[in-house]
Each structure stands twice: as C-alpha cells, then as structure tokens.
Length: 256
Length: 245
Image 1 (cartoon, rainbow over the protein chains, first blue to last red):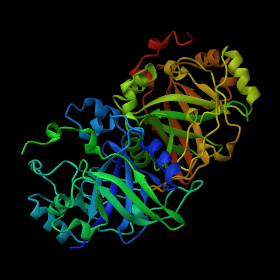
Image 2 (tube, rainbow over the protein chains, first blue to last red; image 1 turned 90 degrees about the vertical axis):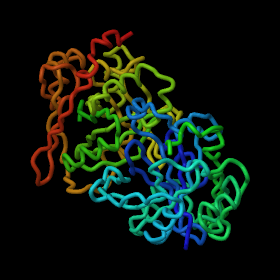
Image 3 (tube, chains in turn blue, orange; image 1 turned 30 degrees about the vertical axis):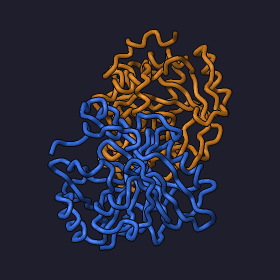
C-alpha cells in the first residue's frame, strides 16, 4: 500500500499571528478562509516532492469563543495550547498520512478495528471544511474509533486520509503573495516521537521504508518538518509535539 | 468629499460562519485574513465610493484568559448572534479629523504609530495605516455612537480589495442608506451640528442607538437590505453612560 505524508496540523492560539510569524521565519506563504465548525485554518502548501505528495500545513485556531466557553468537556488541544512556549503557544498537533484509494483507507480502518468517516460532504456540508467560494472539501479519513480509542495507542498517532479531488486539494490552492516569499518543493523528512516499531505497528508496514521519517524517542507526535525549497536551502520547522506537555491523557479519551 | 460613511462593523460570534451566511443571503463577496491582536475581520466591500462591512470577531480565544471590558462587551453582544456594533464615518484630511477630535475634546489615534501590532495586518503583510477619533478608555461604539476615520493612503483601502468569488455573486454599487437608532438631533448633538447629519444617508428609527440596517445598491439586482440588531439591543448603552471618563 502506498502511504505518503498528506499534511500536518499546527495548533495555534491565533492562526493569523502564527502564519505571519511562520512566513517571516521560513518564507512559506499561505492562504486563508477555510473553516470547519469552531476552527479556521491558514493553509501552507509545501510543494510536491518525493517524500510528501502535495503536502501542506494547516495552522488551526479556534474562532468561536462562545462554543469554547459553553463546552465543559476536557479539551486536549486547548489544554496543550494553553502551555506557554517560545512559539507563542504553537504546537504540532497532527501528522496526517495519505492513501490513494478508498479501498486502502477501508483496509487501514479494518485493521485498526475502526471505521472510515462517511462521505457526506454534499448532504452535510457544514460537517466539512468550507471555503469562501462555496467549495466543500470532500475527503474521508480513518481510523474513526466510535467506541473510544484502544489504550494501546497514544493520542497523537497519525490519521489516514483519502482526498479524491486532486485539483481541489488544499495544497493546490494559490497562496497570498508576500515579501520574501519562497517556493517550496516538497517535504524532505519529518521527525516523529516514539519509535519506528510503534509507528510501523500503527501503519501496518515499515514506517521508515514508507515515509521519510526520523524518530527522536520523545513524546509521540510530530516534532520537526523539513521542507525542500526550489530556491535555496531547506527549511526546518521545529515546534514541540502536543503530547510533550500532557503528562496524562486519560481524561481526554472517550470510554471504550 | 466631506463627512461620509466609511464602514460598518458587524460583531460576530464566528466570523467565517457569519460571512458565509451573509454571502448566501445577499450574494456579496468578502475577503479574509485581516487581523488586529485577538480579533480578525472578514471584509465585505460595498462598492464605490469606498464602503465596506467588517465582520469582526475574536479569533484568539486564549486572550480571554485575561478578560477586559471590551472583550466582555464583544462576547455579550455576540452571545445571541451577529449585531451591528459600529458606524464608522470618514473624512478626507487630517485637518478634518483633528477638527472632530477638538469637538470631542479628544485626541487622534495616529496612522503612523510605528508599532505594527497597533494596526490591522493583512495576509500579504500589508499594515493598514488608519487614523481615528475620538480616543478613550472605551470605544464610543459601546455607547452606540459613530467615530471618524482618515486614511492617508486609500490605495489599499479595505473596500477596494478583491473578494473571494462566491456563489451567485452580485456587484455592489455602494451604500444607499443606513438605518440607525435615535433621532437626527441625537446624531447632530454628537457630531456637532445638523449640517453633518445632512451629509450622511441616514434614516432614524427611534430605537436604541447604533446601526440597525444597511441598504446597498447592486448591478442588475434589487437593493440589498442587511438587517441585524444593533449592539445596544443586547447590551444597553446606559451601561456605558460614563464612557467619557
């Protein structure tokens, strides 16, 4: 099965500030206006390369203060982003892998004892990422643990995604032109916490042979993304992994 | 052009949902990505001579850990949905702006403040130079009253930036009228004379102060009337009667 890097989620307190700061740091620009329920994303396309197939970073922040104030459930992401760090509270909150067919996605879900999210983007558009031009992002993901995630898997194991619409892919949308903007040429490697054994067990195949991943043995989750650039030196984006600041994730898990 | 309407602020609990709703309701397009500190605005250009609605809301919920009166007001007026919360007038020179500042015994928020965090910033890195009056501990919006702006460079005025294409998009031709609370005399008292009120396409409905409706012309389309309650309906202006302090 061809598993590739699809995208990365970067949690931010303020995606507008975070995206502007990331662009100053790296030259990578972004586009704006996509949202889903109580979050909005600034999207940072990373170009096309052998390690990442049209990969992108989604810089996410909450944009519905009232929804947050009314929600009394434990909120893993909010608690992570509440912890100060040198990046104004930015944390990597997800590594998302991609597959090339729904059949592959279903096979992964079945192997992990879970489901695939339904494809209801036409009948339930507000359950999907929306763009100002009316485009509804139709993708499916797995695993969907409707009865809780088994304890053996840490919170921040990567999700798997199938994007059927390549022209509509987030990575293929034009970014805002800005001073000192650079041109990305794809993901070269990523650093992930934990071990190759753990991630391989999750992926169902040798992770190091499937994607350009390195392991640092720290908390499970993304730590670094290296982006090749068409116009010069590689860019390495370092942010702490979300799990690095949550010592006990048990209260965030849905009972199985 | 003397005193005119520059823009109107629409406070929103969720600026993307509100922009999506307004777009579907009216066909008006909008652009995204402008922000100032803990807030962002989705901008709805209304056509010539240069008006717009800014759909504004809090996009840094972590900033609420340190609450202040302004943030609480925004939360209070958006708890039940969108509310118009600001009528923003414009003048064409710094001299005119300073005249209004003197009238209000106030000063001017200067456009050349060197701190970028004091200005709206756009996704392309542009920092919006904008001067306004009056200046105070509280914005006069909380009292349902308009403030006045001067843009030293209108090249990149918010009303002139391209929108995202939206389904069934209409082409706006400018504000035809704005319905506000109170009376013409209330407005004349605030602005310093009835001559200023007569420069503005305002209709007065006698309700609590603030904006209640905006009528926009459009090419090959009936006039578009956008009705939302004024912020003063959610939080009475009497709460801020001591705003001058």
